[in-house]
Image (cartoon, rainbow, N blue to C red; front, side):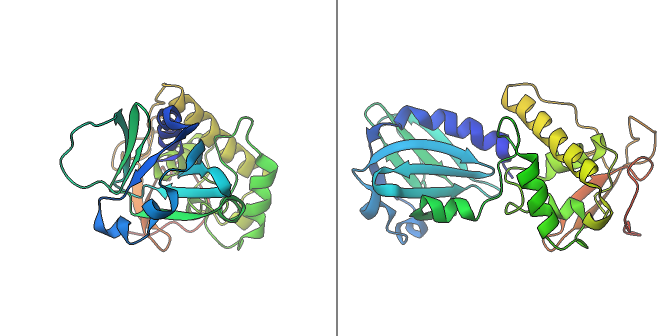
Length: 253
């Protein structure tokens, strides 16, 4: 799944359309049922921003189109009139370029304040608002495991499975530790680590992967064997080293 840094790069690419009145098409039949073209065609695209894993396109009149890419969605920016095969979900056509959304099933049109209220603070904000993030984590059920909570976009926007795993490893916190057993200092360190790693990736430096998709290999810090196991209602795979990330009830399998 594209994570926050990928969405920020997509927002940068789409900036070429900001300040223009755009032609809007929804070639994919599932997208056409949302009647986006009828509501947005010819409107001024005022700005484009990324908030966590969401791309927010601000149109005149206070309308905001939220795009979430899930596992397979991709935004591409091409010269106007480019030939393509297949039916994209959405096409925004400007004077010289057009933004094309492929396989992007989550498209929501609404008012900006309503949409923003449902999203947690963006992990990539500079500097990160650790206090606002911590307050949301503390308002959540404290029996919830931190590895699961870090993926909740209502608590903090932008962190996905990759950066969750690496930030927890970096700070020696087990993904299975309940929030009640995570100190405020530890929580701040995990969030700060995720922020630093994702900012580096956004700027072109891809940090080394120490645990993500390395199950069965030795930990580069302690030599223990890295494990993986599904976590949370969606069974997203958690990666961790039991040797140096302790706490919580680890799965036996």
